[in-house]
Image (tube, rainbow, N blue to C red; front, side, top):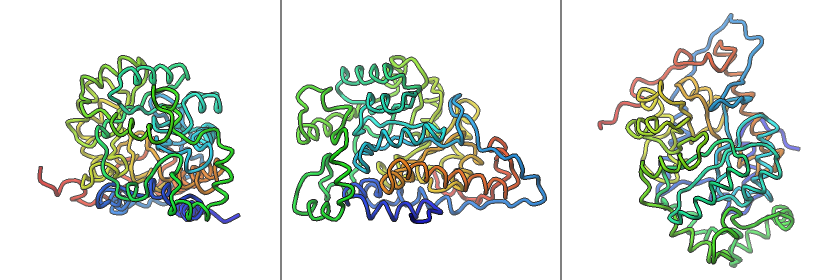
Length: 388
């Protein structure tokens, strides 16, 4: 068993173990991937203030996100195709999150269905909704999430049209993989992954196949999905979706202060400062760079979370110190899942919690609730050198 000391250790195992098209799906952004890179590298510009001769005993990373007690303010982000990273990936990631005490968010584009995850975990989880043109399908999808006792609806706002991701197009990304000469050659080197996938409960999009008329195979599913993202989504439609759900709502994909104000006005329980992991608008600012502006705009009106770029507990601490009440990890837990299944997700969470706890102590704090700007050294032009 290799010694895992950081998330990059899991990433190296993940790359060796998972087929190239699914590795590339997770480890890529749109167009030039500038925003994808900036999401992580911009955290490095923020420095930490060391404090000494402070009582560091009795520390706690426990907190709350939208009123839910969490072992640390970190949720597993919605990631499509998770069940292709490891057999029954969504179910295993959800179980790891449940056992650890953090929220799991199931993607609309998951391999395991809402019902699969509910049956496997027996506990509430969050469900992420993509708005589709097929309003009847969306209505039934929301009802299925209600029936599964999902405790929050996460509505993604930044995927009305799909940003171009060069690697996915060149790899012919599909679930299950199309058996071309290129993919067969690669799959032959990933025999452990393949053996596990033979026993998987599902290998297609479980929330769609069997729930949409005329969807019976990968080709019909691909055609339907490509046409279904709703480019007409606006605040009126978002409000109707919130009313239809009737429970706690998190609006994900906020990167502009005016959009944040609209989300707060609608009564969202939380917003997620996110650029979809750099997979949509390439050239947008990183989430961490936009967080201070969002906090200035709505920090006193709505709970603010941050997604995109987090690879360590230090990244989590920096986001919390800048005002976020919660954070999300996507790629970080996928690395663990692809590397070692459920145990790998647990390992990723353990790594991040240990880094958060140790860094918090060395910054002179004993509780994540006490973190603030006083723990950081932020460049003067960190979020203000661009003219609007």
